[in-house]
Length: 338
Image (cartoon, rainbow, N blue to C red; front, side, top):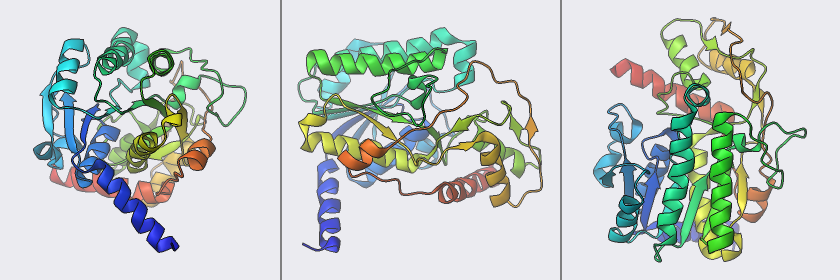
């Protein structure tokens, strides 16, 4: 079978995997959740989402995706609600993407972050444990779970050394998931991704949407840190594809249950460099304001995606420039309609 035929076969196989599949997505209103739901809809999945808040400007709503999914009102605080959803909708695949994901918010209000990210995870996994139809669970952890490591890039075999509130919440999410996989043979795998960016992110204190909004308004962008923090930046559509690829591979190979996978473009850059890239693409002469106010954050972190590329045959589709061009175009249209 030639390369083109193999590609066509794999595309057909993955599309048929998701067609009419009952998939429960938490965090569907968020940046990566919205992109993941859109990808699932395009593949013909029967998508069920858990929605706590109605956010009219969320991409999930603006795109019309809510017209093609089943919406359950509620949150992760109720195990009985989660059990009902998993049972009544005969859910086969769970994508747990919900989290309070803003580092600054976690530093100011750690309790709500722990409630959402830690308690929410054990509630969902306990409900999954009691639901026999479920065959794949993807749990979204984070590169922040690694904490501050002496060696870069991070690899999956490194210990989790998180210390600050958000980082600890994701390390707990990670370890709880590992515990359920190890102790109860729950069919799950864990993803650790870098900093997501892309269309639909309305958290303006994040560097990408905040910088783009500032430039579109003719204002100098603000950098909270000193600009030297080193990070992976991961386009949201690549993240959505990674989650689906992980679930597909788990279905085909149960030996992957309990595994952890980093997903990254493996092109780390500083916050200041990223800001300069955005300014260049937007043809702006503005210069950033560097406040140097960020505290309780890891200075340098980035991921190795070698394991995902080897075991899952996964590669990112978008370069940083390609992802930023799509993102800038989305915000330009968003603000022209506001």
